[in-house]
Amino acid sequence: MNSRILTFVIIISIRMVLPCPVFSQGQTQTESASFWSPVETSTLTYLREYEWMAADVYNYFLALHPLPLFQNMGMNALNISEMAHLLLLRNNIADPSRPHIPGKYTDTTLNNRYQKLVTHGKPSQDDALLACLSLEEFTLQKVMLLSLKVHHPDLVNLTEMVARSSRNHLRALFRHATTRNLVFEPTYLSPEFFTTVVNQPHERGRGPHEQPQP
Image (tube, rainbow, N blue to C red; front, side, top):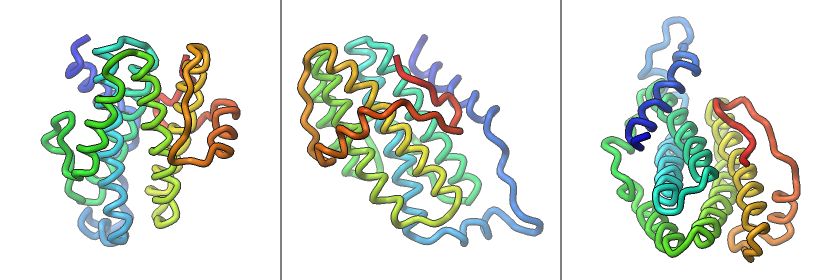
């Protein structure tokens, strides 16, 4: 299926699954945004772009080194990005991902990360697996730090979903890397913590389409 069509189908399916924004009596969309601190607002916009960047990386590798794992994880990342998008709409916060061009993001640090990841994973499917492990390791470390600064219930739920998804992705990627005798050394998480995460069972959550990876 054409990647643009697949993206459209995924987004439409999420909008059908997720509830419409609901505000308290007399509350307008503009007033709702006032309940978000500046740090929470920047965290939400960052996660919106970050998860789309992650989906772009997986889609790049899927086209270059076809592997069902890349498709499943790309869909999960896009699902989470769209959930962040719905929170932006609900709270009248500008979407940093419009228009969207893979590899081009409002947050320039994401441009650099995207280029670094696709460059490292381009040579082979094995290299792509290791690059994705690095992506998810950084994701988990980053979202754990971000979660310490947020209190809004919707954003707490979103950061928990990102962290859970990242842990599950790490487990699946590490399992595939191990079967290929690939060696991955964590750089963002401590070796002890990384080992604990990948040795735990798959976590189930409330997010749409969250599923075990093959």
